[in-house]
Image (tube, rainbow, N blue to C red):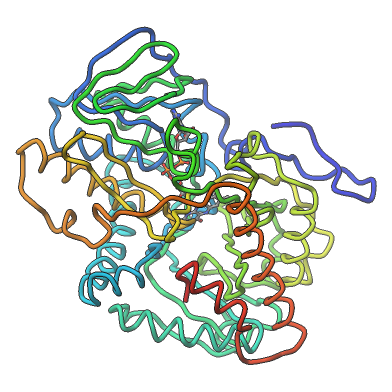
Length: 474
Ligand SMILES: Cc1cc2nc3c(=O)[nH]c(=O)nc-3n(C[C@H](O)[C@H](O)[C@H](O)COP(=O)(O)OP(=O)(O)OC[C@H]3O[C@@H](n4cnc5c(N)ncnc54)[C@H](O)[C@@H]3O)c2cc1C
C-alpha cells in the first residue's frame, strides 16, 4: 500500500490507492512472466479481469484443445475486477433500452439470464474451490427521502414486469429491522445478489484457468489490436480470434479513444466495527446495500466486519485518462465519509482505513454489449456501466458461444440470441464535449439529490429526469 495520507485536520488519513483495500487484505500478486517474442494461439484475450478470465475459463472447458493466451498489461485484477464493491447482482446496463429495441420478451430473457448468472458464479466458485467470501444475502436498496421513495416504488414495479416475482417491497420499519439506515422510509430487496471479496474471486479464477492450461502473460501491454494480431512491445501474438476485454481501459488502445468512456468510481473502507457497533446497525443478513439517490452509493459488510462503501466521486478525467493505482482525491474521501455517517450517524469518528478508485466502461448509449465480428475474428465485451461483476460472466459464456458458432462447433444458442449480443453503439463526442457532458450530467445529479433532501419533495427533479433519459436509468 502507499503511505498513509492526510485528509485534513492534521490526523493521518486512510491508506490511499495501492490498487484497493482488497489487495491490502489479500496481498498484491507477483506478476507472471511477460510475453517474450512472437507467438501463435487459437484465441488471444486482451485483459485479465473477470471478462477475460471467465472467457478463458469457459472456452477452455468447452474445447480443452484450444490454445488460449491472455495478455495483461499489469497483473490480472489490476482493473475494476480487483477494485469493485463486491456486489454480485443481477442488474445489467441497458436492459430497458434493449426492451425498446427488441421487445419486452427479449429483455425478460436477458433479465432471467442475469438472475441465473448470479447462481452460476456462486456454483462455479464452489466447484473450483474458490473461497471468495461469498454470502448469498440478496440486495437491499433503500430510500431515505420522499423522492427516493417514489423512485423506489417505480423501480420495484418495473422489476416485477421483468419477471422478478421474488422481489419484496418494505416499509420503514421492515427496512430498519434489516439495516438501521438513518431516516430510511422504505426499501426493495431481491434474492438475486451476493456479497463477495473481488480479489479472492479474481485470484481464484486466474489460478483455475492456469491449471486448465491457459497461458497468462502479465506485464504485457497490448498496444494495438488488428484482425488476427495482438501487438505488444515484446512481440505479436497471432490468432484467428482476438477478444478485447479491457472495459474501462479500452480508450487507451489505438483506434478506440472515443469508445467506452472510463468512468471513475471511488470507495472507502472502515476499520472492522465492534460487535457493539454492529448491534446498533443490524445488517445480520449481509445483504449488499444501495440507495435510490441519483448519484447512488453501494456498500457491503465485509467478511472481516468493515463497511466498504462506494460512489461516483470525481466522475471522469479529461481525455479519458485513468487514475494512478487507485489514488483518490481527499475531497472524494471526505464526501464518501460524510455519506457513511449520514447513513449511520453512530459511526461518526470511526477510522476510515482505506480509500481507492477505479474505472468502469460506459458506452455512448449506456448499454452493455458482447460481440464477435465474424469477418475479422475480433470480439469484445464490456460497457457494463458499473454492473460488471455478474455481467462479465454472462458476457464470457456468450463470447464462448459466439466463437464456437463462428468456428463451426455449434449453432446459435440461447445466449447468442440475447438482445445485447452484437449490439452496435456509436462513439463518444470528441473533447472537450465529452468532459463537459459527463461533468454536467453528474453536477445535475448532485444538485438534484441535494434539492430532494432539503425540500422533502416527493417528485424527482426534472433536470435529473432529463439526465436519466440520457443515461437510460429508471
Ligand atoms: C470502484 C468500483 C466499484 C465497482 N463495484 C461494482 C460492484 O459492486 N458490482 C458490479 O457488478 N460492478 C462493479 N463495478 C464494475 C465492475 O468491477 C467491472 O464492470 C468489471 O470488473 C469489469 O471487468 P473487466 O474484466 O471487463 O474489466 P477490468 O477488470 O477493468 O479488466 C480489464 C483488464 O484489462 C487490462 N488492460 C487494459 N488495457 C490493456 C492493454 N492495452 N493490454 C493488456 N491489458 C490491458 C487491465 O489492466 C485490466 O486488468 C465497480 C467498478 C469500480 C471501478
